[in-house]
Image (cartoon, rainbow, N blue to C red):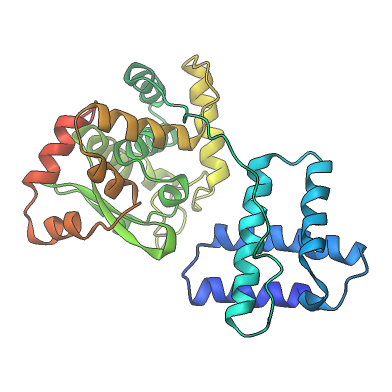
Amino acid sequence: MSKLQKAVEDFCGFLLTEKGASGNTITAYRNDLGQLADFMETRSITDGWKGLDSSSLQDFIVDLKTHGYTESSIARKVAAIRSFFGFLASEGALTNNPAEALASPHINRAVPTTLTPVEVDELLEQPARRSTPEAKRDRAMLELIYATGMRVTELVSLNVTNLNLDPRFPYVKCMGKGAKERSITIHDQALEALNAYLEDGRPMLLRDPSELALFLNRRGERLTRQGFWFILKGYARSANLSEEITPHTLRHSFAAHMVRGGMTLKGVQEMLGYTNTSRIQAYVRAGLTDEVRQAYIQAHPRA
């Protein structure tokens, strides 16, 4: 392991222990910075970060462009480099930060792809047409991710203990970015799909009684992000949806439909995990459910 690679691992350890970064975030940083380390080794720069200057970093960016990386990919790598060298500077390992003036490419962000409520209904109807354990699981997953707007990583990370299926105020607890937990109310159709899966689907997939994962694959193990992606693609084809559907499409659709339905932007941001959720969590703990619950029911197309 080179000195630069060792510094990268120290930084990843810092992200995990001090910042509470997710495994996916750390993997992305490690890959991006590892790519920088490999590039510098081809330039015979082996003295770790001490051998790097702003010109070397700019050469790396030029090399990325030469190899056809998109502006969004380069922007992510620039952000990783800035964070890495900012960490080294804060640790007193640098007197001059070579990444301080590193420019990030300008990105024209496209409007997120969303489905119409009718398209969502058609998508969610696909697994409901079958009665297999996998279909019950798939229906519960699709209903839940659209009911809550949660990220796919949050969805597949759920355990059975994260559910409160009390029909008076059903909700799910999920762990978001930065290890921040939030509680999200769910509507009756999602509740019904979850109950059907827990009663007639999950027991058929379960192999180990001690397994806590909510959504299981055919081997009785926790379903992966890639597994959900594959499942979603199949149902999108069955529903004859023309757009390139991703798990984030459902998250964007949830947000767009809730805003159009009259929920405040602040309320949607809280449900998506972008801002502090102490208010809704307080309602859950105290049973003061009317404000958030009623706003949710009035705004969500399937509630």
